[in-house]
Length: 522
Image (cartoon, rainbow, N blue to C red):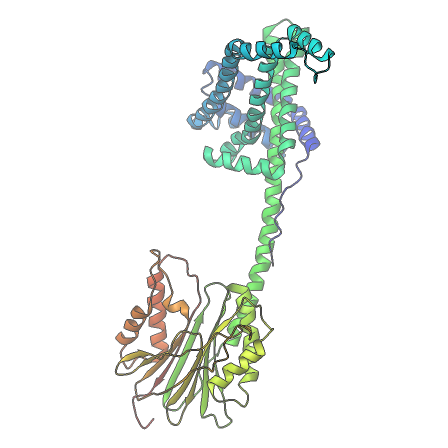
């Protein structure tokens, strides 16, 4: 099941206007007082408290739009973080100052910069040439004489600077709310604000900012033309300022609501995925032996630990004759990870059940599995497999392998049993038609046969070092002879996990150990 993650949500422009007007009208005296104090205290403090006061002011408006009663203490609640907001204001202020400096330099340099190209251009177009329309030089020359080329150069430079500034402001206007409302650091708030703009649409946010600027500029222009009183103009600006800031608060509130909705959707999807993975995990674990068969004179046990909820490792035991004298021990590893490998392992289990009928030789079983898998699995998928057939009365084990890890025979000395063979599932056109190599081993009293997957020897720690074959052999040889297969498997798994440490486990771990009792009469 894949997560349905929306790429872009709908930021409702008219809802921003409606929310702003509603909260403004409902709490007008309170918001006017807060706006008046924010402007006054920012001016008195020399803009030192500008950022923290407006962060608190924005939270007040946000509370009003969320149906709560705005509190005056919210206006001063962010003053303790004034350094954070002041540094942010300085950064934004310097950004715009830099833009104005560039424009001023262009204005200052433009007369000298454009003089030579302009004169040269006038001389070129003044000449009569056959490919120029006769009237064109005259019209162009008159245009250059009547219009100020410097004016157009400055306008062009201002546009080129205004657009990046607008983009910068659009992506940053959430910072006040994020840094104050959520208590995050400024750098984190900047990243979140950019994500919000990218998710909900850049042009809609541009429209919001231009609308807010229009409200503020309109209030200033209106009072300047009608009322010639600085204090009254100041009050009118303070009156309309909550209306402009409320547009941003509504956009932020919509962002919070959308994120909450998406979070609930994610939680539901993750819950469904977890249930599905648990079902797959239970199904895969159900394929593994629930207990070891009763073997007179032998002890047998195994384990499979998926790296994820599900995996591609697999082991099983199967009696190959009716008298239960020949036991097949199978360990397999499906290429790939997680769910895809687990599904292939389930199909492999059913094929193995069929191919073990009327077959005793492990090489014959592998040949049958190859035929069954032909065209049934993806061409990029293959399965390594090792089969050991134990003759219970004699203690002889016949082994064959399809590209799996070499089994280990622990006796007076430890040795890998070298078995050659190509993995299962490789297309017949590619796979060489060579028979699977077979080895015979007789387990003496106290001897052990160890089958395992590459998740054991290829386990990696944080330094990217492998557990490797030598370390594995040493762990096996250190185990005392009276340790049962169950105890030995537990020790080996603990050693592997201790070696991995805090590094992420990337492959499944499978271990199967067959041990012959010490007593010859068992």
